[in-house]
Image (cartoon, rainbow, N blue to C red; front, side):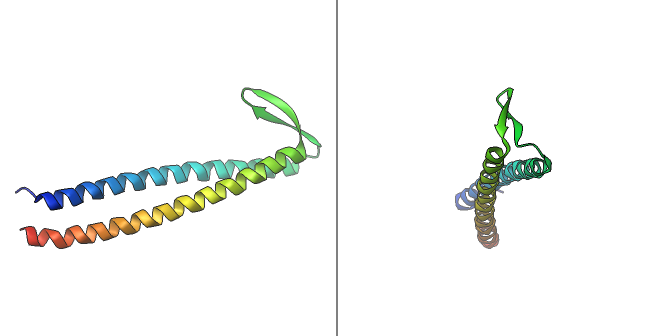
Length: 113
C-alpha cells in the first residue's frame, strides 16, 4: 500500500527535522567538549605559580603572560557557554516541532487507510 502524497511529504519533513536535530546534538557535544577542555586549562593555569606560561599557537609554543592567557580562556568559556545555551534552545524547538509533526502524521495515517 502506498501512502498518500500528503503523508509522504510530512514524513520527509519529519526526516529532515530528525537530521537537523542530529546535527544540533553533534554540535552541542563538540562545544561541550571544548568547554570542558577550556575549564580544565583554566584550572591548570590557576595551579601555576609562574607569571608566564606557554600557549600553543599553531604548531609553536609561545611564552605569554599568565593573566593574558587566563583572560582569553575566561572569554572563550563565556562564549562557549552561550553557544551551548543557544544549541539547547535550538534542540528544544526542534524536539517540539518533531513531536507536533509526529502527532500530525499519526492523526493522518488512520484516515488514509
